[in-house]
Length: 264
Image 1 (cartoon, helix red, strand yellow):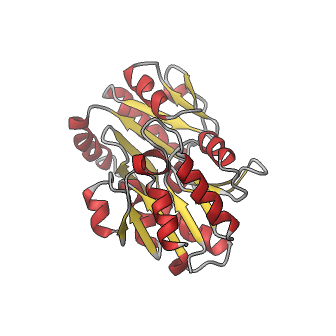
Image 2 (cartoon, rainbow, N blue to C red):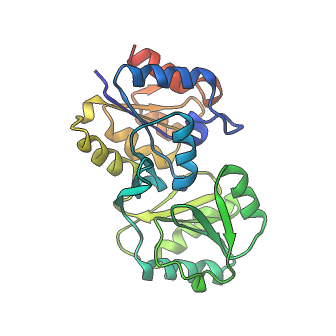
């Protein structure tokens, strides 16, 4: 019997218009009423994810910032934090600004950028409910640390940027794409898979009793960890290849499909 379901937000639980379908909401409530723990596992800013947790009336902690944080929104406190080292953050900022690459920094409630541009506008459309603040030179922002960073550029430049960041020889970090334009950087332990493992242990749940649902490369570790790893029909082919089940798309109530098939 599955006791815990962890679900990604963008392109998974959320439709393309960033809403949650009525069918998904009904299925989630039905699972919770049966005693299943349902949580979110997202790369989003904590505040943005909390808004969705409240919309679903979730009464359990949520996983945010790609697994860097497990947050209890009932007490407004982080249970677990895995933040990047300050000196590493500054090294990446320096690289980004020297090469005119857009960079996002984060805390629990805000996204910090050097200046408003087409990439900040694009990100704002995706991060519904998030506060974005332009601060000038990010090296002078005063932000002590951050759970993650995102470098944003044209799709054809992302792989080159990844190689350049790797040449900085920063130890103990993850570098991965979430969306085609986004190169995300977190602490090595700050993955959705690692966070989900710690989350399950908090509730004394075995990995065989866990379902993880996602669509992209930032979901790979939690899909690999879970007893039942699920990829959306609209997900990346590489993620489908390592998944146990491929559900319907985010536009066709894929999360509800998983709940009905494997919980009921």
